[in-house]
Image (cartoon, rainbow, N blue to C red; front, side, top):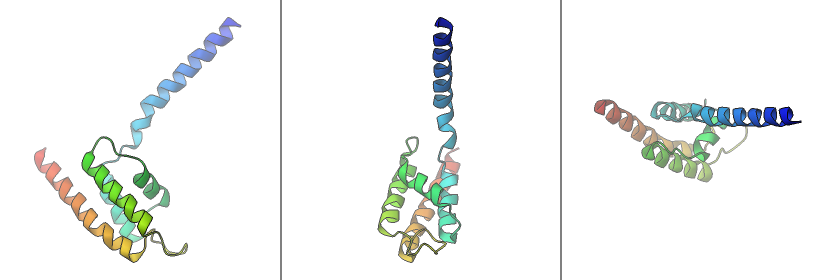
Length: 115
């Protein structure tokens, strides 16, 4: 019985450690955010990627998080007009993304100059 409990505790600790160390794999970057907005404007964005971007806070970069919050507002205000559309937003929503995309590109250039 003791061996079973020790094995169980060991497995729980191992799984917990793996979950903690693996959770940062999907870190949002400026480049991935730019790519997502470009795909949104081209009608090539994956709905799941868009939902994850709009819903999960970006804790490591305040500027990216502010853009994410504005994208979440746009997603809420201008959802896809029909389920057949390849675009995840209405035309007006897509127009609202364009300045955000340019803002991210400028932010990326600024960060590259600082390096």
